[in-house]
Image 1 (spheres, rainbow, N blue to C red):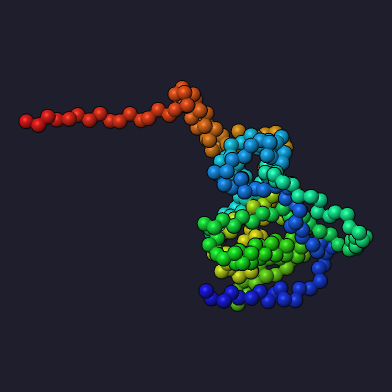
Image 2 (image 1 turned 180 degrees about the horizontal axis):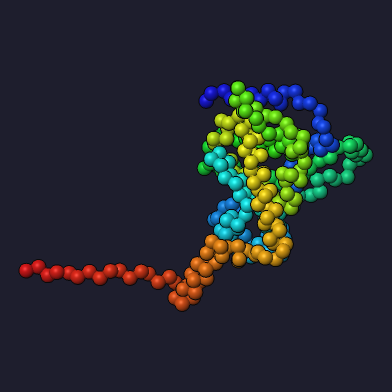
Length: 268
């Protein structure tokens, strides 16, 4: 494998021009989203973080079609409400228990942004050693951190794509939507890409998902869209009702197709 080009733009970063200097990925996701992207894994209503969510009654295979998503040859990105996550069977204790010494005071004039991100490394898509998978996960988190806190972008140069920083793109409200969890499914091709390509992919994915989430939330809050009407656009509700009605007529058993008649000719 040829050596990957180093990103020299990150060797000497200037001081941050805004108060947003930290992006937190820990303790921001109340459950697991692996059941939302695997069709074979079911979920009971009492396992939801919030069973009263409008999408809690949607079929499992339909939620993957409803959710905002963004695809590329090297990575797949999904966004799900935190209410649809699966609660952990063994909840973790408080992250900050009482300590015998006083805690350090918070840093003045410093803001942080919380990002709920889960990176799912399927062995069928990410055929790499374990330490290489960790590298891909670290690069994805670092690309998102630079986009949110520094406004990282890419620009074309004679040597190829390079990372640039734009102050007008700084801010978590421009890229990250609250009460939503982002699920990333990378592939092995992502390891060969330079870091500038990571920034370009994450920037396109977050921008596309933010637009879809805003449109989705507006329709749900206005009461003009629920999961049944949304799925009816694709004709899935009609097919499911017809299938259930046909199964009820046959007492739960699907009627086999009738074989064509064959006429045997007698030999003389």
